[in-house]
Amino acid sequence: MSHLTKGILLDIEGTTSSIDFVYDVMFPYARKNFAAYLKTNFSNESVQAALPALAADLKFDSVDAMFAQCDSNESDTREDFVHRALIGLMDDDVKSTGLKKLQGLVWESGFRSGEMVAHLYADVAPAIEAWKAAGIDVRIYSSGSIYAQKLFFGHSVAGDLLAHFSGHYDTTIGHKREPESYRKIAADWIEASEILFISDVAEELDAAKAAGMQTMLSLRPGNKAVANQDDYVAIDSFAQVSPMLAAAK
Image (cartoon, rainbow, N blue to C red; front, side, top):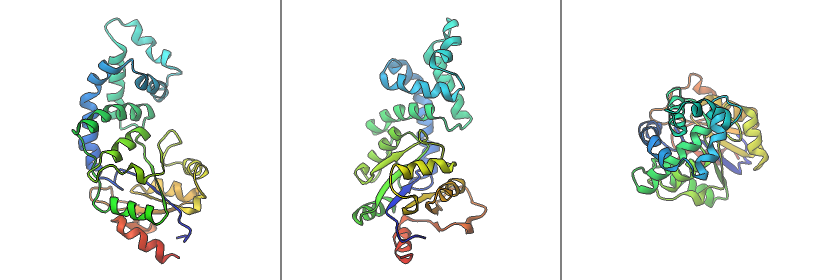
């Protein structure tokens, strides 16, 4: 591991936060509230701005093409069409940019009302604070939208942590299992070799390593087992990161 670690890039699910919270709380909240949210807010600029990405995810050339069939059926509204599409994408566990944007908008109401408070492992907030105090630039890269990331860390069990992050990346920069995504992040930030990426997904770590980043495998309760775990530097607490960095100098 390089001693030139100037930045730490963090995944969310299975790394800073429990996968169970995302799948058992956040996803069901979105599923339950999509219909009512779309009915009330469909004409809002934020919703309309997410529709081109949703159309692309559904393999339509444009929003107009996406709604062409819907508009020809008088019994179907655009809100109903979008609602069904979102539920279908969730059912298929598709990493859809449009879905993530609209989930973020629905989650906003849950976080702001206090119905949801983001789970963090107990070691996360102290470690991030210590890294920042040591001059390390900390950023997030998640399949969840940047908007949703900011809601999440702004309404966590440890309080509002947004001031500790210098940047956020989502799938608009590229998918997490593609090396080019990490090259783009480095180009926006610092040299790839100076970035440590921590994730629970081996394929993401492989992509980051191919782009020249340092990597660590996050082992948290409930995470999927990694068959070749010994091929990675593994941690089960962020408290282990700083000593490893110091030892590598």
